[in-house]
Length: 114
Image (cartoon, rainbow, N blue to C red; front, side, top):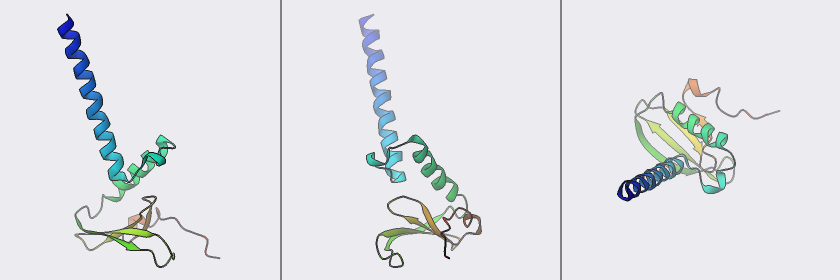
């Protein structure tokens, strides 16, 4: 009985460890740090924007981080796809800030240019 309990505890610890490792890996891939954990909704939004933006042109050819000279500060990641299209993401927020795909144009944050 003690052996069964010990095995059960070891299995639970292993599952928790693997789950934590998987969560850390996913958060790292999404660019989410511990300071970004204000709400689960923000993490889910970021995850959904990345997964939905990878639907068209899913074959990545090149990823490069460039200085954002238009904004005067910061940087952005430009992802170029096999079909010749590209997407640009803010390196701090992971937000889509530019794209050559028509399907992404509604997702881009449109500022007031009055």
